[in-house]
Length: 265
Ligand SMILES: Nc1ncnc2c1ncn2[C@@H]1O[C@H](COP(=O)(O)OP(=O)(O)OP(=O)(O)O)[C@@H](O)[C@H]1O
Ligand SMILES: [Mg+2]
Image (cartoon, rainbow, N blue to C red; front, side, top):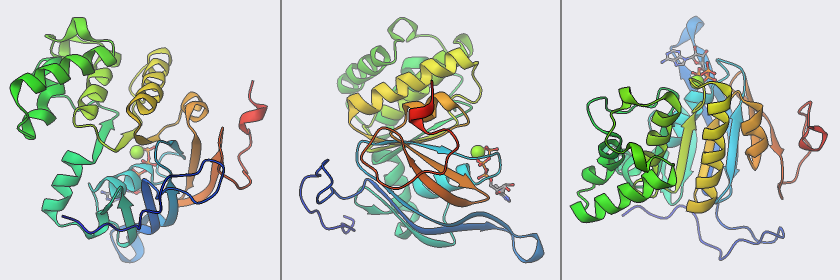
């Protein structure tokens, strides 16, 4: 349906040769709210790309533009300038219908506030994206069972969100996000509403599912544990990307973060 934006050049070469096409490409993205003297430049000329399979942590102070940038990448908001490509879709050129399809088939979101439907059980919440896609009942039930097992909630399938702990609710939200096997998972402070221990278990779960499902993820966070689990840390300051910080990987470039990975305990 959509025209592939990037010419596929063959397999990625981890040794640093000809790379696979990026899973996410952000080019010169800016988003300004309001105008004139009261304009807020939430995101300013941000460019970066994410290789398939990477887990990227997006960090920065409150108000630095993390949510705005994530929404522009996932098609919940439109930038005023620049271009976003996710997988083979040019997000910034999609129609409303195209954006709906993007969020159904390609990108999934996990939010700080979980966003579950209170009157539905955990299993029904997880199955919702499959219902929207009109998956067959047997397929849906099997997938829901597998996803609940993946996030360790097989025994809580019938409980409603109000009958689950915060960490359990976020697990349901993660399972739901995985329902349609998205290529990109966007999580906006997924542990922000949880105590630190529960938050850590959610971050480890995210790390594990990104690996096992072979998808790409961008996770905004204030938590140093997430930064350690990430393959790469992107730092926003006042709407600008201040540097890309490689943690355990093949990304080149110097970091100006104060505590590089090799100096952490
Ligand atoms: N709908 C809006 N209208 C006007 N200004 C907005 C809107 N949404 C965000 N902003 C402003 O844009 C800037 C970036 O906000 P954003 O929510 O992206 O920051 P953030 O990094 O996600 O912060 P936090 O860590 O608190 O979630 C802030 O100055 C904010 O006040
Ligand atoms: Mg935010």
